[in-house]
Image (cartoon, rainbow, N blue to C red; front, side, top):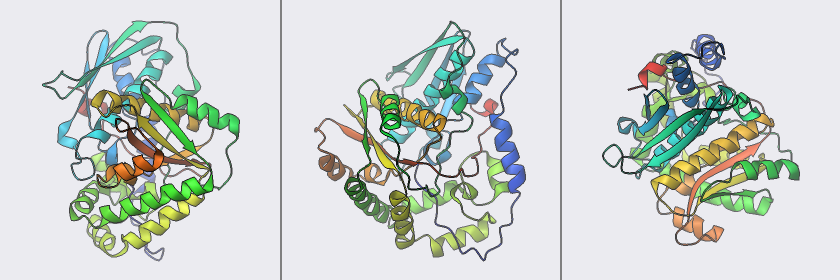
Length: 360
């Protein structure tokens, strides 16, 4: 869920198959015929829509098991990001995001989804069991937002969001043991920016973090198309380049100064910042935080509002307690996610792996 590298000089000519990559990304999100309701086609389609959720570095760190009347979602620990996410917090948040998509997709297919997280399942790794029962079909605006939702890492238009819209976002982002704090006053947003800059500077001076990020960047559209995962450079407004060239340029242009300037600009042209907070720091609450964030993101998308992560204050272990103290949180509470939001243009879509690759 961390950002990608800074934009290289515009004089560089992108060499990519961007049209083919974006055509494939759109095809992944295209609606399927509602007539295909027989298992396993329906169950596979529910998984297809679940994996359109965001994940840390777009690792798609999940495995799905399909049964006759349920779908289980387990962590794929081979896709961990130990540098940016040493306690697997973001990994379980990602599972929660996928769960929320599945809930809305199931309802649109006439199924009620009842997710239950079992922390002891799968040898203590934890599994989300989603039981499915027949109900009245209902297609909601949040379901319709699933294929077009994205973490939009571009600039926003610096326009205010109405109080009624803020209330809708707050309601969508609140869950069982998870709340969302919306900050729209400029002094508060500037304070958050200070923590973003401190966290970003620490991460970019961490060789392990930079190496991990580079491993998940897909510098060219061909690379994104081939792997079906990772952070496509074009989705962050960067030119698409061959890996050998993009990797070298990243070392030249991906600097704390350039990234901090970009974050400062983007915070200042955002309408507000949302911080998701859990009552307790455990896997069950991390999953719930993911569900709350995804519901917030889908609601925002339905309202024409963009969002993107600014998670540095919660990712750097030395800074997170300071950020929590600034927010006035209790000792037991954890700030889970930091998200900027506002209106603006969309960015290229990210890829996903085939459904068959995530079903066990």
